[in-house]
Image 1 (cartoon, rainbow over the protein chains, first blue to last red):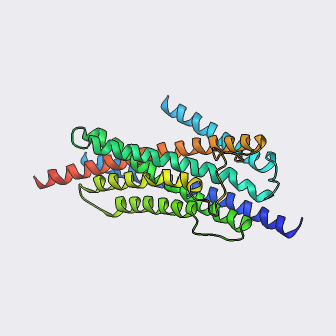
Image 2 (cartoon, rainbow over the protein chains, first blue to last red):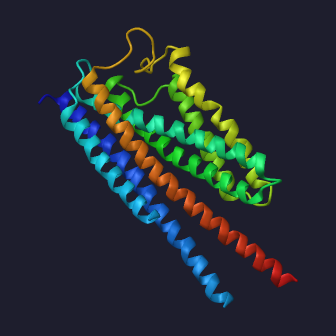
Image 3 (tube, each protein chain N blue to C red):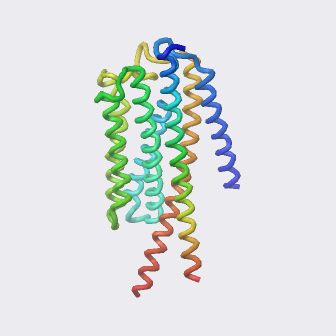
Length: 49
Length: 235
């Protein structure tokens, strides 16, 4: 493989990796947010009893 | 039943993601001019298409909120939740477009960035929606949702400009792949792979859009409850 082809491959992998890192980080943040809102609702419910 | 349907949809989406990746990496042929780097198109273009679709969701939610906020407050809150979900998920996909694009550009053009019409209008679109999210995050008071809805509508006006930019102005960015007139288009073997990835990313987008909508509805319910308790404690 020549140097240009190696660089092309590395840039392609970088692009796919960045895509997945962005998407999965956002999904993780959504999961954290969901848990935080659920806990807040449960805590309020317990306090009001 | 609802949980089962969501689980099934999530499983199909994950399957589609793997299938799309396999198609993009191992089935699609290399481009005759650009070689392997051209495969970035299978993540870059679907991300742009999905971002546009979700900015349209945000536009619909914003218009719905403005229309319903006086007479149907509960419906208005649902519209507002769709508006923020569409904007946020749209920004995520737009971020992918703005990071995969320069990686592709560096190899194909020799530069990371240029102030070409398509790139600049896309960056402006991203900045508008980031400011929309910042407004929602840091502004307070009853006018915040209305201001955000107006900004969301203005932001969506940039979407057709981004879409048409490489038709109206011929600068650095390549001509449109589809609907760009004579000479545009791809080999059928590449089109199939692109469409699989388009479907996979669209399903993934819908999945996180619905999740984001539900998180926002929970947040709204918590905020309403908090406000009610604060009022009761003052009486």
